[in-house]
Structure formats: structure tokens, C-alpha cells
Length: 299
Image 1 (cartoon, rainbow, N blue to C red):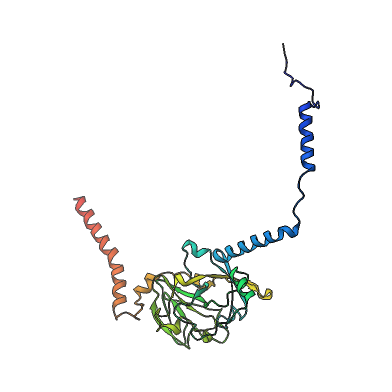
Image 2 (cartoon, rainbow, N blue to C red; image 1 turned 30 degrees about the vertical axis):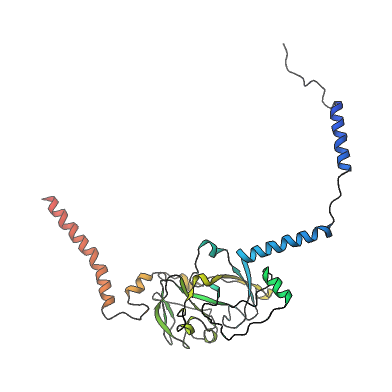
């Protein structure tokens, strides 16, 4: 009885055809072309790098230069910030407290000089390695979004949906809005209300309420959110949303409307109490009808 089968040759024994294949592989390796030199591959590497940079600038992140003092001390003139351009592609709109870059909505920068970049700056800006000095973009902080009620009286804080904002990011010595108080007003859907952190040195939404956009910035004009101060190295930092925009109730737009706050200012006397009375009366009426129905059924 056979216990096992053999392969037909002992281990280590090499057949003639195996030897021929082995020699052919050695000959092929000996005749293989040498690797390209680094200098020959360098243009290809540069081309791929530039293409990736262009794609990143177009769809992911772009660098912007801060041209003014309107966002001090959060941002200084000459800072380079990186702006997230990916998130808006997924339909995400700006949130309260975000620092955003946006295209000039209604000639806000009319009369402002535009620097003329040289050829090298133009090329580098096209691929996102330098900010585009020719673009008329602005950078401000989003204070209120579509549906919010926002106001600021002289001597007081900014109020969003009835919640006062504690704004530690405002430039030292500045007031919240004493130079240009406003509101109350309601931000239209699809738009935002923006203000600079250096309040007394910022031509923001408050100063463009007579424009075609009434001071509001359309969301489709927003390039993206500034997330990082990338240059100079000594100024490197992130740009998080301040805690004041996370306070409970700040997103309750309905409550602001019930309190009589709107685009035309306070509602007529008695409107707010009537709204609150109606809100309380509806549950009471429903409870009474249920009680009566239960009583009839019991009989």
C-alpha cells in the first residue's frame, strides 16, 4: 500500500528546462536599462507638483494675504492665512463666529488701490503658492447667518437672537459698534452679516446698508473659511470659533421673532405678548378638549 506520492524529482534537483529559464532571467537582468538620472526626472516631478498645487488651490486650500488692519488683533497686516475651500463644495454654509474670505459683494473696495504683481507673483498665485494680489477679496468675521436677528445699540454689545455676545477678540480699546450702531434687523436666507474685529477701523456690513445688498454678503460670494495663520512662522495659529457663539439659545431664531425683533425693528406694542399668549393657550385648549372627550366616552 502506497503511503504517499513523490513529485517525480528529488528536492533541490534542477531540471534542464528550469536551468534554461534561470539563465534567461539572469541575462535579462544584466541587460536591463539603467534607471533614469534624477535630473531627467526632475521636470516630471516639478510638473506633477505644480498640477497638485493647482488642484489644491482650486478645490481644497488657498493662501490669502491680509492687506489691512480691519481684523486686528486676530489678524495683522501682512499675515498669510490658509482658507478652506473644500467645505463649501459640499453645500456647507458659513457659521456664526467663523472668519471668512469673500468676493467683494457690491463694490465695497471701490477706490481701494490694487497692487500690480510681477510675472513671478502671477505664476505663483495661479498655482496657489502665493496670494493673488489682483483679486478684490475681503476677510471678516461672520456675526449672524440667514434667519438670525442681529442688533447693536450705542454703548451696548452685539446681540444675536436675543443673546448678548461677549467678544474678547475685539481690538483693545474698541467698542462693539459705537461708531455705527444698527438694527435690529433680520438676515435674509442665503446671506450673512459680517464685522471686523477692529470695529473702529473696519468698513464692514454696517457701512454698506445702503448698498444693493443692504450690507449682507451672499453666501455664494464666500470663498471659504480662514482656518490657519500660516505666515509668518512667529504668528502661526489656528482660527477657531469663539465660545460666545456656542452659548445656549443663540440659534433660536423663532424666539427672537416672538420677542418682536425683525428687519423693520421692534414689532407693534402687544404683538410679542400676543404671540406668547397664543403659544401658551394652544396646549391648554388641546388639554381641555381631550378632557371633555374622555368624559363623554366614559358615559
